[in-house]
Image 1 (cartoon, rainbow, N blue to C red):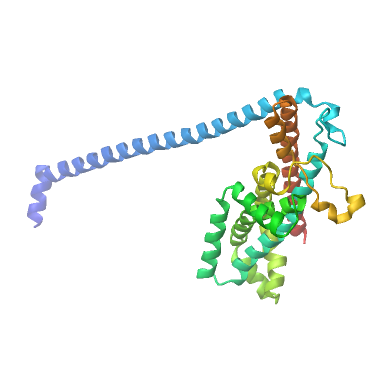
Image 2: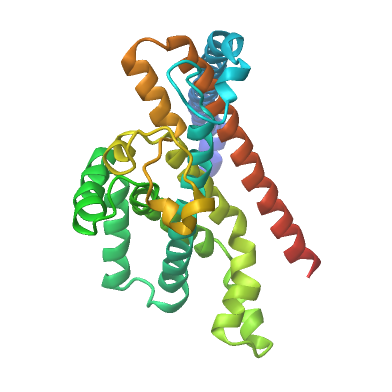
Length: 317
């Protein structure tokens, strides 16, 4: 055996075979590295191109709306009462804020509470939890016109609330409930189990652990779902045409109290639709779009600020 090895090395055949194998591996490795670099460059370029395209489209839309709408932001658009002369958007602006507040007050407690039950109390992986998740994801894909028809049949007709702000708010609350619920559930699932174990180790019960340890850490994610729901509320038109109506007036809470919630109301998005469909106030429609855009930005900033404050308060505690 030793004589064979010596013969092979003496003749140089073994050394030549080793060099060939090393050279072959080197070529394959170089080819693989080159292909990997090419794929990396293509993917990086695709990401940058997508980001640039998104930024360009957003800048174009915002710029177009501002250029077309800002010159027509006149004082008459902000008069307290609407008429065919001033085409005031102030009633629609106030109704939009009221609609958003009432809808969030109805949807957020149910959405967050349902998420807490599914994550903290229900058995993980059970068929009930899977059924609820599937149903929630299905509800997210239903067109808003279907929600509007449901609101028309149930809230407006069956319950006798009529075309009112409260009918529209209840319909919108049902629309955004799946979004709030799923995002809250994902935010709670992202909280490490060590937080729960620490609370239990200190002798806290499940409810106290959830509200003192788990929920504060999930606030940013929950607020993200609230912001998504808020955006859908502010921009909704189809569902509100069937449930809230198109009357441009501010609910008279001074005279009617909470019963003013059952008055018909027009939001900014519906106001834009009505003006555009009439075809007589296109310039005022662009001006309303500017106000609506500013309102969405302000509401998002307010929600983000509130989330940061709550998170900071939790860290201080």
